[in-house]
Length: 177
Image (cartoon, rainbow, N blue to C red):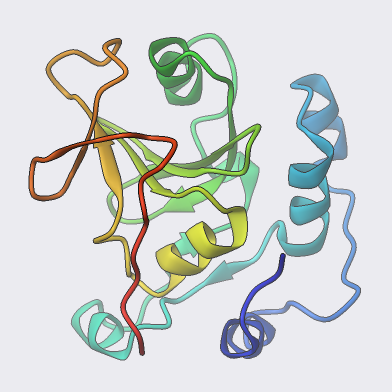
């Protein structure tokens, strides 16, 4: 899987290029046993800080940098981290890949490639790494689902309308730009 051509063009504006490979985060990722597909994603896109691709949101947000694919901007992976807390609640390990500002949501990915916002709440934005990151960059997260905030260990997920949904079969929908 990969990003759309429009997203690749956007990423190029902020320093990405075809065949980009960095090793800045390898020691960190090895320490926390990141899956190989997440390591490869970070080696290609890690460290990039960029603006949203949604022109309406960009004008509202004074066109500032909002998305960081720098693992060290996140809360980390230690025992007292947001990723560890939510991993314990949902029963699967989450790996931080960046930060969404100014809300300070950690951006995380699970071992199956699902993408999450982690903060006061746990929200899943996609079951696909590239679609999820692209949805964040496009500020198109309305098709996501949220872990039950009243009982975070219940395994119950709700869409933004409050309907109970099945995590594994939920159809994440995105706007067309």
